[in-house]
Image 1: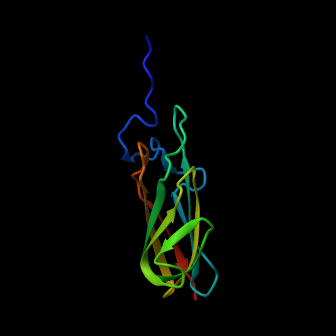
Image 2: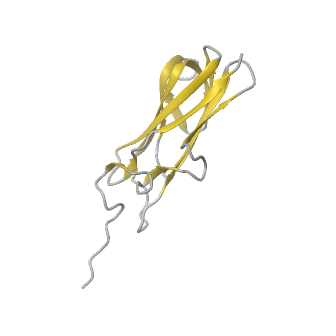
Image 3: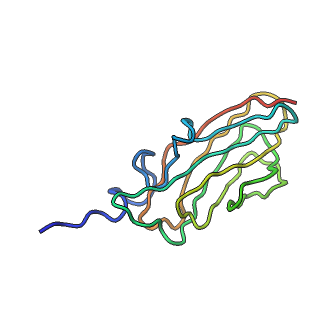
Length: 153
């Protein structure tokens, strides 16, 4: 008699290594998991990341789950815009050093793209972490995502 395979991952719900997690930083998109792309002027920069979903054997993503990416910046910045489907806290137009971006439903994951204006020229580092609210049995990447760029006046 055969036994059934686990529904999603072999581990418990919660953080897991990126190469094993259901929700993972898609390294095909960026080896750093996150990208900081500074514009040529006006202290403008963009932070982007790609989160994907996998399960083996295949099961659909958890209903009602929210994917969250928290971005900590090395200097305060004003959030100018965020990609469709994502909700930012604090909201666009706000200056802060930490922003939480939420995607509900988490579904298959998605691409996050947010545009900011920094406060001073020079090196800027973005440190991102991932979590899933109401994950069911799903796991998410435990590794942080880190990248930096040089802001220009």
